[in-house]
Image (cartoon, rainbow, N blue to C red; front, side, top):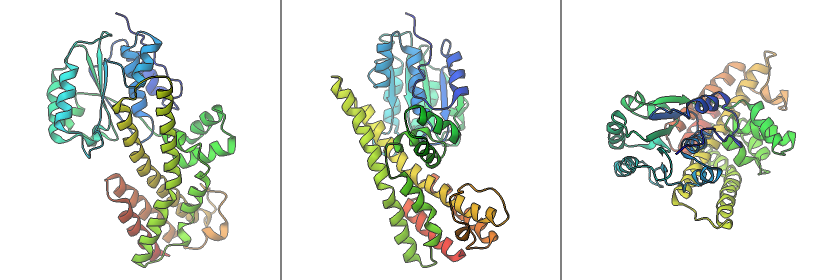
Length: 358
């Protein structure tokens, strides 16, 4: 049985070098891969596209892979729980040892592998040491540090970076998005094509940016004000998240309209993606806030600006040294969020700290 080894990359924004590398490997793949990179850059989508190239014998079978209904491709995720447990890992490993149904090989994708428990990782390690001959494993995570070094060492690591803003913007324009809106969405997405696609249909992206860039005029040193502002900024994300939910709902509706069943794995993946998008929006907001403080320092020394539409009088409201310290506070908060700290507490601490610097 011969598979179609070409990657169907339509709709994927960026990652040209990664896609070219996977295209070359599709004929003779390694037994295990680890896709690592920031949230919402397209790792999970590329994993499905790669899986489709490995098992598909027709365009119809490619479509079934992308809809999570191909018998030789399994996608394993936390299923709404906080972690990906050992029972799920063992079940996936057991399925991977079976003979392929339609293709020459099977593919097992561990989505959100960063959430794998230590016991699950150890169970998977034993399989990676002696992998089934016909199975390819693909682990998707944000960092190599999220998994035991012994697991990482047995995988071919594929690194995904943020996609340049100009590339994201150009892709949106090619899809029919007006130039100004595409540029704004790409800027807010911060190099994450998935986030850009989620946000491009929502008219609230401009308001989202304005509210985050307006934070420096609202911060005080009073803790109560910090919590109130934290709640206000988290509420500002709601319209964008509602737009993401609507986009996901339309995808489900399109599958149902074509008479196909909606697999639970796809619904679970959408739920996880929504949570990641919520976290990504907070980090994106923090990056925009940091850019305000860096612009404040740069403007007073005649340097370039990330936000040229900001008024010089606003940027000169604090000394350059204070502005740089504030930018450091903001990026510190982003690191805390990436360590799964609670967003409301992190933002309240940040806004109170910034208030003490003004």
